[in-house]
Length: 282
Image (tube, rainbow, N blue to C red; front, top):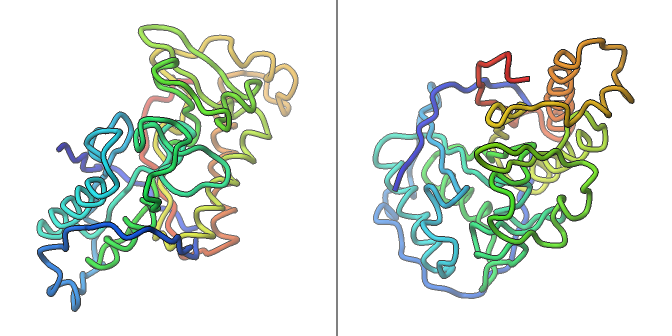
């Protein structure tokens, strides 16, 4: 099972209260470190972090239709491995393609969790809440990792739920065709920027996360963007003459709005971005 260790994280400041979700009784194998975890204290002088990817089942769950018991046991095993190897922060991917691996009031359950977008796990549990508990028991931070704009990395690979943003707001979507068909939210639309900030604020308000983390926070580079957003640029250029500069400013607006949303709820929650250093990708 592949773990992607992150290499470059920009840490900003920005919150949360956890929500309790009732689960039916299922059997979860106890951690082999159960007794030791009762008194664990991990120093916070440096961040030793790891990504747990859920998109296309890269790291967890190993398959999209595992039983809840197997899903939870796999996650216990992963967190035990990380604890044993000295990690103190986990970046847990909970939003892969405008979906949710947590109990979201805004977006459908992820296909990669139940093999049907919009279908909740049965018996019900909340993977984000479960991961937070596993991390904190081991003295680790849990950062909720989101892809802010991606709506599909391979359009048509599976049916979208009626509650998915592709179905609810097709006017927000940009689609790019190349070796694959990729779609994303258009950050040049103010309603999209508000939507992304609302998603993040909801997580920070309801869950005891230690941080919010973004990657893929940019316009696509494969296939590259063309004229898909030119109409929006012409309608709302905000006085910017170059469409590439306008796109960069759109990203800046999203990042600052999300930061402000987090800070308004709990400024102790960290705000991180995995940078991708290609200026020309816009």
